[in-house]
Length: 332
Image (cartoon, rainbow, N blue to C red):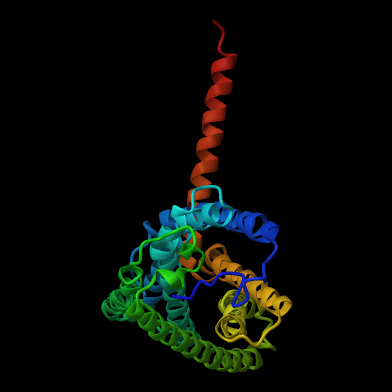
């Protein structure tokens, strides 16, 4: 969804440091891929054991699916950027995996907004039972979100229909038809709206959550009930992840896009904006590794199931070890 421009920008004489492009960023994405596939694979396994008993769990399950899909696009980006394979792979990255990357990014942003609303309602109405949640509505809403984003993204694949060559794959926009470029621009506006709408939702909800927690603190400060306050503060992990992963990229993309579409920046400025964009894009990818901390911190069912899995593994390991020791000590 985000236009992928050549690092050289508008000036053919302006180039970037190949060591950064072909070594550093691929290594950073490799780190996220390894850590992310392990953590989200484990999270997916744990969520399979948890029933859809609340809106919160449904939203979390959608987030982990989105994260896994994003992570699966990383090997293609790594191989393409590091130039470890032929240039033909770059055409596939432009047409398919890059679109999936941004598709999953904005799905994650939407569900973080929904999770934030759910946490605000839980903070404002702490005694409301999760069983009273309208999970059917949440399931329908989740399906509609996936369908909407899929319908928004699919034309970006279909309309990237020019034959790839060694030259035009350097800039993904060159692979799009005229209507493809127009659709791409429309999608960018929609995605900007999605981000800023969820940005507003998260800021407003956390302002209200802070007020609710302060009221709770004033009511309980003389009772010595510090455990409840500590648990409640964990809810701020969501806004922390959102601001670390998504806010820097969406602020950086504005001047970066201007540097690529208007010949008003010096080469050094273009390069600086390119590296800022690439660095903040990596931070958005880091979201796939940070989301499991949200699950563990805020979802009691997830935490209980995960600890139960670890307990079973430790117990099995000890049992196997004791069996081996007994066999070794048994006389022939």
